Image (cartoon, rainbow, N blue to C red; front, side, top):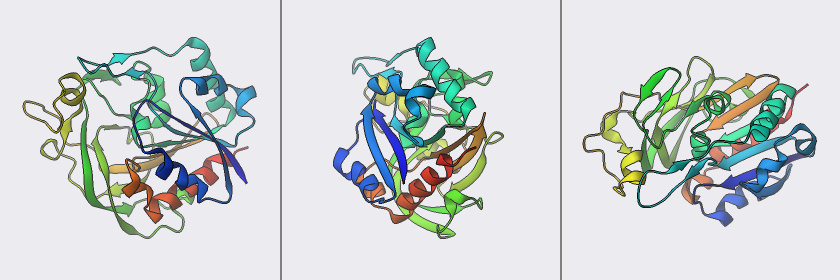
Length: 258
């Protein structure tokens, strides 16, 4: 039995269908804590009660509705606690919008292996545009890496879900899953237009280079095993048997550490 801490808040989601994903896993015992209260558990002592953290949160971003979002800086205690967890070998599974968390803290992006930018910003020494999003994309996912996370998953499967045109640190992660969708500017909408201008589904005047088609990866940082799965926007995606198996596999893999 794997004991996990399931962390949410910062982005809306349908609670009952999402939590049912974890109820369907008899080998997983989950405890749910929302941000910011969850930050008190990001230290070696408190985290010892859990085999892994599953992150479906988006901390550090406050949406205003009348302009660009406010970006918060994480406390030094929280940063130190998280970095110590990574060095000690605590496991993390990050899902979907969690890749946008803590936009002012570059090390957080390195821990995840990428970043979704709600506003134009600077990352890894480059000035970057805001990222793109597209809801309800029916696409085919290919398994591109043999790994415990992809064990038992068909070589390809279909899913309908939201996709991101965002920053993926391909030089730092082990690819697991790739989409057949075209990750180009014309197929996505500007995140900044949506949150800062209230213009949903708009990409007029927005430019973005073609992006990575990776939607799932693993890597090890410090002694920790870390997995990111881009899947998981809504109940349609939650119901995917492949997505559920990937989460189950990911929990099992990151929970095993020396």
